[in-house]
Image: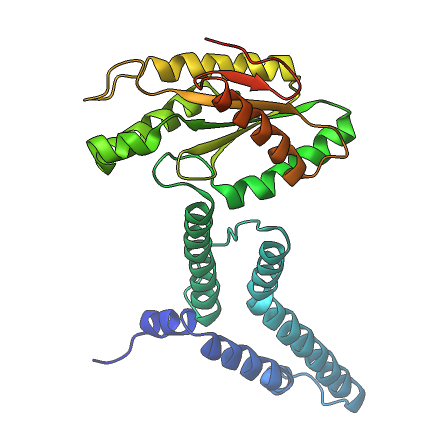
Length: 294
């Protein structure tokens, strides 16, 4: 097949090397082209005029060459800034170039690869911080988030409460009805929690049948009321072959102080939880308060 001008033009557009070669060739030969055009027009060969034309053509060729090359590689600067921004704060790389030369291919490939990598990393991060059975956070996630909430509560001088609870006699459910039923119980509990938490509350499964709620902007009495609502809803669960009243939980509530560490908060809530179990289970116990019976 004999190459046509349109085929040659497409080849140049699709090749950065070809475009650079064409621009450099034109810039280098522009003084010669200008001189040939000048002499061919019949003008005089005055040395001063000839020198002026050569200098002007050289200057124009140089400026044209440098500015065109800058234009060719400009997308790489945008890509570099986008990648640096992504590394700094995770801003997605939104860069799509219409050009089909090597720079366009590299830029679009890098942008696509980073987007795919970011998606994979987000999924891995979610898997690493989420309890797969209940859909709640896990202990690792809670450790990260509770520190943030403590800092915010201290800055805003707002209360923050912690609720620890675990399911009563959960081992007996597994032993008597199998782990499939136990898993259904945990999933049902997780669903109740997700459906009833406020948007700024935190919930995590931190052990086999142990859960933790972190309630920002919440006093101990308010946290106890929230825990009581959960207790009542768990008691109503009907999960075959378990009838309502079989799934119950004991709750420990503690309102943190600014000086409390995460370990101290959980320890105080855990002590209240232990007292709730000692006094009959299926009840809410606030740290330092009398137990509340059903």
